[in-house]
Image (cartoon, rainbow, N blue to C red; front, side, top):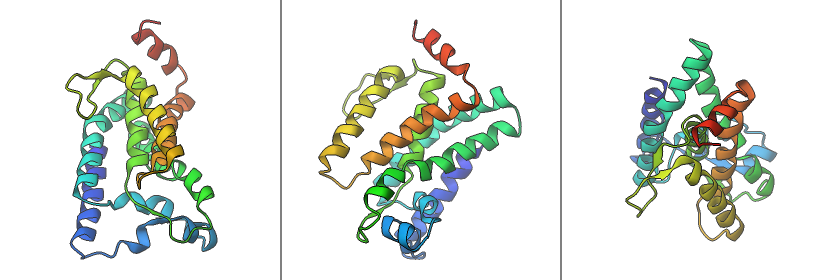
Amino acid sequence: MITIILIAITSLVSILCFNGRLNGSPLVFNAYDIWHRKQWYRMFSYGLIHGGWGHLIFNMLTLYFFGPVVERYFTVLFGRPAGPILFIVLYVTALAVSTIGDLIKYRDNWNYNAVGASGAISAILFAAILFEPTMGIYIFMIPIPVPGYVFAPLYLLYCWYMARRNMDNIGHTAHFWGAVYGLLFPLIFYPSILPYFFKQIGL
């Protein structure tokens, strides 16, 4: 249920920005404005807008498939209302945590902007992998699902490599730290997940 609400809110704001009914400029992650003008809300609001339909659809589909997995486990482990609240906390805080690296790196660059919920989506995806490491994940152009515990290190290596190359406009650093945060957050609140994870992958 929380997943659907997040998708609905994010989609609505993004679409309003697409058609010009809402000015998305004040919502964008701008490292200079955050650091020097103390517009800290931008570390969260940028996740409500996206760079285009493809960006929005890809992120929301990923959230749609993996968000309920994390919601379900949080609810089982922590009950209601604690479980759903923790799910919201994970998503919202991941927006900020995933951008700390870029904030520090680009704090004096007034021209650096970022949009999209990808950092939070990565956190949700990796939290889902922590709970169900053997679930299949499809990678673009590969028709066979890859187990989550195999996908996870490959994804982190890819994000780290692409962030170092810095050859495109994709926030690979945010993806990397969002994913790491998605692994750490559940472990902080329920460390017993780790042996359960290893048991599922046969270790």
